[in-house]
Length: 112
Length: 113
Image (cartoon, rainbow over the protein chains, first blue to last red):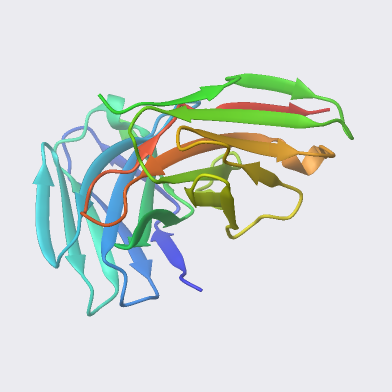
């Protein structure tokens, strides 16, 4: 059974400083990786999807996938207070990509 | 624009009562899913379906049934609601492979009292 774990559990950074979130997974055959943002009481907003090793950038969000080390990272450039939210990593297999295994989330707070 | 619509958006149910949550998609997707989210945590898969009239168990199916009467509609049924089923429920749809997006509904907040 795939396990997905996120670290840290919570993170506070100053406005404008880089924020880095970590996600580890257990099944090396996984091939779909997504980062979602969820503001309090709201739905899921997909930030970046990555399907092969390397980096993918979407605006101020960059995902970095290294399947050999079982890690996928999310870096947020120059975060604003509006980026304060719960960040969720989700992993799946290409043949059933909506069958997602989620991490428990990282609660990010941006200090003005 | 791809769309997944959930109804109701919120509901209060009585312990032991029957609850039905509905999901409708206009994406022409084969796969539909029901997830549950407890406050401050990630989502967990309850049931999913890849074709009408067929459903599959996800990771936490106990206490839930699902129904897929058509490609567009997917329901989650709690026959005997319990306090522990208080959560936010999300429906989603996707295609098979293709590295495309998974589309989520806005969620249904269920409170069992």
